[in-house]
Image 1 (cartoon, rainbow, N blue to C red):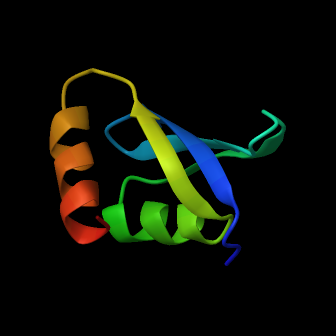
Image 2: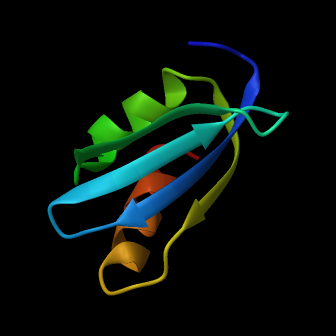
Length: 74
């Protein structure tokens, strides 16, 4: 894991989450689907750096996912 800050965008879907991670200069580090699993998504994010900000698409189910992510990985 890198200690460098990263910025994360999450596109919520019932079965998967699209995770896009960019660095401080806005360069895309990764943009891929992950299973809709809080632990797996968090490990994937932290594997690319320390999240500074996370943006999540607002749709049905995304609030529950965001709450679980924030509770598990404050």
